[in-house]
Length: 208
Image (tube, rainbow, N blue to C red; front, side, top):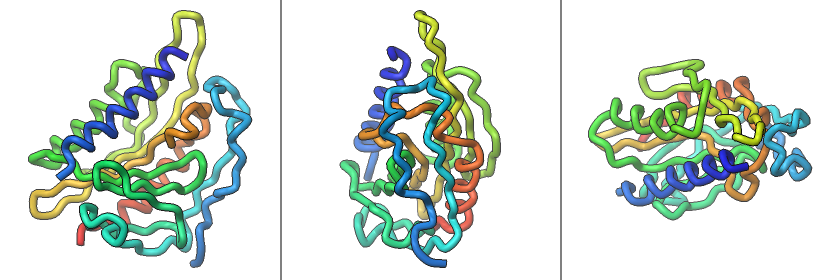
């Protein structure tokens, strides 16, 4: 579990970085999937099966919750959202998928994307990182935790990052593991779901 704890620390580091640099119909995502039995089972093949369905998602103004996040993007109607510690917004699609929207203090789009890659696929705790799909403003990627010295191996997992900007302000939108349900099997986070989320964000996200 040493490597997984490193992943947890990396996730906390990402949140801390943003903290210190921060200036249809209803929810068609399955929010009732029970993931409790798989907590801590990073190599468990019986990962929870979660299907992301973005049909019916509605334009949602995040600035109504956090004035520091003037972002509009499509989300499930009535989805749970919370203002996070850096003035951004955390969106809880279900008990495995969380989308975090944050302001990032960088001087260019290229710098923003480089920072996201450094904390993701290029992080020293990961291996086999690759870009699955790339756009001028974001990417879908897959990686897995490095094997443990005791032989423990981890499953590949896929996520997305996207950046929107206006008047020199840059905002990141990405999916992350919820800290209160962090130790799910890597295969919970499928490439298909990451691509669906990326496409939904790309098609709808904008700065007010």
